[in-house]
Amino acid sequence: MKTAHGHLSYCSNIHPGEIWEEHFANLQATVPKVKLEVCPDQAMGLGLRIANQASIDLIDDPNKLTELKAWLAQEDLYIFTLNGFPYGGFHNTIVKDQVHAPDWTTQDRVNYTRRLIDLLVQLLPSDQHEGGISTSPLSYKYWWDQRGAAIGQATMELLKLVPYLAQTEQKTGKWIHIDIEPEPDGLLENHREFVDWYTDTLIPFAITAGIPEDWVRRHIHICFDVCHYGVSFDKPSKCLMELQEKNISIGKIQISSALRVDLRNNASARIEALKQYEEPTYLHQVKALKKDGSYVQFKDLGEALAQYTEGVYDEWRVHFHVPLFLDSYGLLNSTQAEIAETLAYHQQYQVTNMMEIETYTWGVLPSEYQESIETSIAREVKYIQDLLCKKP
Image 1 (tube, rainbow, N blue to C red):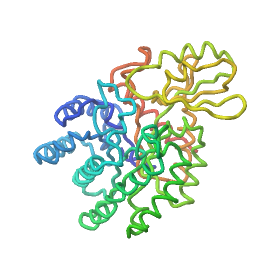
Image 2: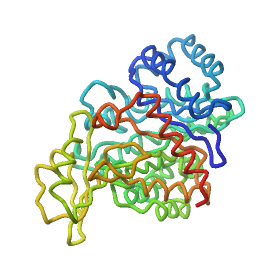
Image 3: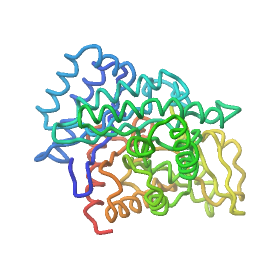
């Protein structure tokens, strides 16, 4: 929905469906119920996840796209952003590092994202000229021995789309940006790596390739995922300020929360409580603050638990998208404070027009935190609506 601080919605990656018919059926069953709870009297925006096969389905059969647009109009819904990070296989399968595949070193990723551009141009409301597509942080770093070469190759593939995006805007009036999402263990895994890549690799590569710098800055943005910034122990307001100072646009704020584990006291009980969050579907990277002030990272929660030594750590941050409205889960906590800090800064400086809630782990959460999907989503949206109404 439209707020005083930009468009707000949730990401449909919570709903299964790799082929379009399946995903659309899940949207039809759930989204109107959510809208009834959170904004019955105004249009509701939707952050749409379109998997690779679904994108092919929609491009190959214009009737499917026509049906989607008719349903959006009927239900008073609109699309302003797409999630193009997971290419396929995000539900009912072991995802782990394969969420990055195929990565930005491949033509498959370029082709998929180009289809999403074409679809978003057609899905944006007639009175809205801006749309964003979030995507992966180029690749997964542990796949590469020569990470610098992989970053270079992925950057060149990404840059192939910049002239197409500029031409699309000239032809249609629709301004689409690709929003790179730094993630733990990605080739661009945190704020510092993203900013350094943008200024020291992306812009110079573009200039060398004859692509105008202003095209790059207009069409390649960052997806500011608050969970990922929390896991990295980054301070959101400081990072947002640096992005603005360096003229790097924030395509959208993805509002999500990570697990925070205070190990300064009652550590054994907290580690025992954390074990219930070890599950086989998604990667749950861990960044650990040691008592000497240094950090150590683990590829997944199981690895961190196996190597845990009492008395070594002050705090763990775990990449697990827990519900936003809770600060604590028994003996465990969340990075909810980072959400409040991010949105307070946004309220003051309006860093983007797009906010998207991305809690997608309901199915793997402990049973005491599970409710019906529509109730769970509506509760998240209402929490953020209330937070945006508070003075920063």
